[in-house]
Length: 180
Ligand code: HEM
Image 1 (tube, rainbow, N blue to C red):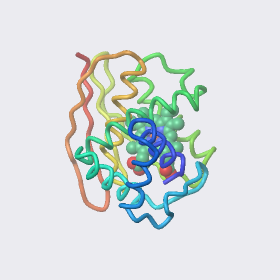
Image 2 (image 1 turned 90 degrees about the vertical axis):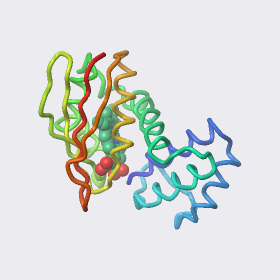
Image 3 (image 1 turned 60 degrees about the vertical axis):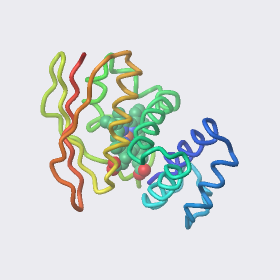
Image 4 (image 1 turned 60 degrees about the horizontal axis):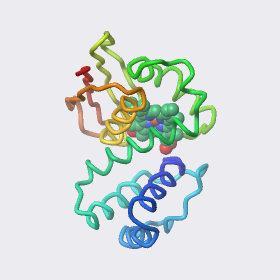
C-alpha cells in the first residue's frame, strides 16, 4: 500500500484527535515501520489494518466505520492533490465509471508499484449505478467511503448498498448506488 494512504490517514487522526493520540495508537499497533511513512514508499497493507484496529479500540468506533470515514476523507484529499483527474467528469456516476480505465491507470503511471483494485461496471443509468469491486486487499469499507466522498464532492444524494459475492483470498463486492 502506497505511503500516501498512510500519511493521509495519520493527518486525519492528528487533525480530528491530536498528535499525541496518534502516537499512542501507533505505539499500541506495534507497527514494524514504527509509523514512519513517506508518501512515495510502499508498506504492507496489514499495517493499515493494525493501525485502524488500534484507533478503533481507543475511539470505541467500529473498524468498518473508521474505514468509511477515512475513505470519504481520502476522496476529498485526492480532489485537492490531483485536480487533473476531475476535469473530464461532471457527475459522480461518470467519475466512478472512469476509475478503472482512466484514473487508476494514471495512478499507475505515477506509482508503478501501486496495488489497485479492479472494477466492473454492470449498470450505469440516470439514477442507478452498479459496480463490482475486486481486490485481494479486502478494503471494501474504504471503497464505500471513497464512493460516499465522490457523491458528496459532486453534491449528489444517493444510497449505497452492497452484496458480498466472494470473501476469500479475493474480496468481490457488488455496490449498488441509487439516487435519492
Ligand atoms: C482522484 C481519484 C482517485 C485517485 C487519485 C486514487 C488513487 C489511489 C491510490 C494512490 C491508491 C493506493 C494504491 C496503493 O496503495 O498501492 C488507491 C487505492 C484504492 N482505490 Fe483509488 N483513487 C481514486 C479514486 C477512487 C475511488 C472513487 C474509488 C472507489 C470507487 C477508489 C477505490 C480504491 C480502493 C478501494 C483502493 C485500495 C486498494 C484496494 O482495495 O485494492 N479509488 N487509489
